[in-house]
Length: 637
Image (cartoon, rainbow, N blue to C red; front, side, top):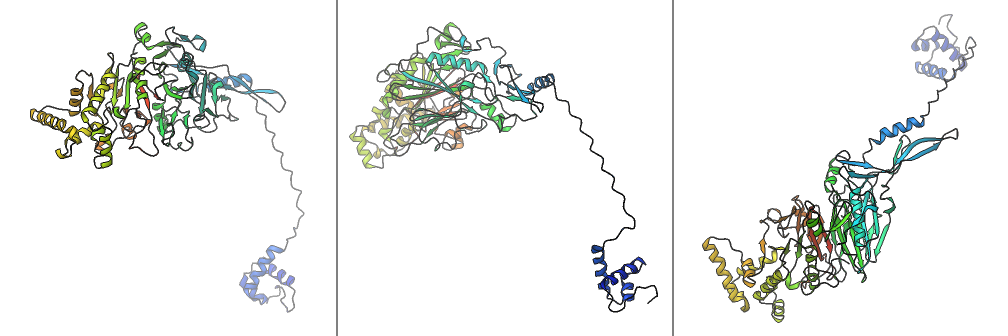
């Protein structure tokens, strides 16, 4: 040990040991050297060094100076508040960027009420302009020269007064939030309401996105939710029209929804219901046989299209229907529903025998013969599954006056002077029904009720075609699955043919084989009809024989689908064509495919819950189709 080394004598205090270690560290000694000098394990030296660093305070040799004060923050310069002129300039600029409609700049212009100024109180207690609330307004085509309010409506003296049998009527439609009204369609709708004696207008609202009614703090523009032209009629509450009919205006359906009525069957609780949505759709809802038909309808919209230019928006734009529903109640509390769809470019409407253009209500005869309106013509009248031997006679009275005119009205075919009509499943085939031939009870009932003669059944069908025809109306029979019963019947062995039909079976088989020998086409169903009623004027078409009127295809009965599959409304809708069909006895409208229901009330073979529904339809010359419910012998109140 050197003389300058700290003492390590036994009994040395811990403080002395720490001081000795610190002194040796200051001399540059390593831990091993310190351990040898002090006679300690190196691990103990290390531990003491670490402990001394954390516990021993070093007394500064010099008193530190008082810390200099931190420089104070530079005060922020108050940002100049925008003047009212600045705000209004920004408002004028921002208004040009608001996406009110896909149509703006494409031959349409917008008119709106005066903006409402929005003021806030600043920290000095002064009112300061921070923005404005804009009215979505109304869109008009550049060529519009009709009235812009309901005071300019005109009804021709040739238009019949509202029917006395009408107890109450409603017009139901939809409005998209933050979107202008379709000016021509609104004016024409109000004109038609006045002509029909309908006073109640109900508009259900629907939104496209979230937080549409809130203005963010940085915005200077706030858009009113509804056009001022429509706001007084917009409701977000359910409207009970009668105990079994309701307008579900509380339901906010996304306007881009491809199947707006999907999933709502149980929501409506067995009541005919209407939903505000711009895509035209109708669905029949299953019900007990003892209950009257239950249907769901979308209303169409009285606002112009306003969609984002992406997939969902572009698809919705293509299906956007400007239109509404008419709901009428008669004094017997029967409810009648029909749609009215507008020409999207002009807003012109056609409803039964009336047409409305630029606020003027005319009869269809006036529009064609007196005013010479371009592209106006009498409508087409398609008919669903008829089944003459099982037809509900009151329905036939309402459409044709078959068996007597409907009480207090004229048959639909005479009211609209239909230029053409087509019927589906005119022949029922009860006399040769192969579904019953294996059931001896059914065969016995057929004979007991004298329904076993095919000749008699064909005669009744042919007579029906004669009695429902009109000189101005060309009639078509759409070849249907029940007509196939005859081909099945011809293929049976002779010993299975009823005695009453034996002679006709041999004659028909001979004609079929003779046509084959001669190399000509032969339709045994048509041959039987013309044989029974030689003077009947009609033409038969089938699924491969085009029958088109005003852009709508009518040759599809609905039993045949794509590539030999079974037909359905959903399947035929995939063709992308406007199709009006029948077959399923159900009233439904899916995309461009409309299924017409039937003229049967019920049938013995159809038991249990059902979606069958009696309906009528018209195909108007603007390409729009109209469909309504049949209640007994009436198609309207």
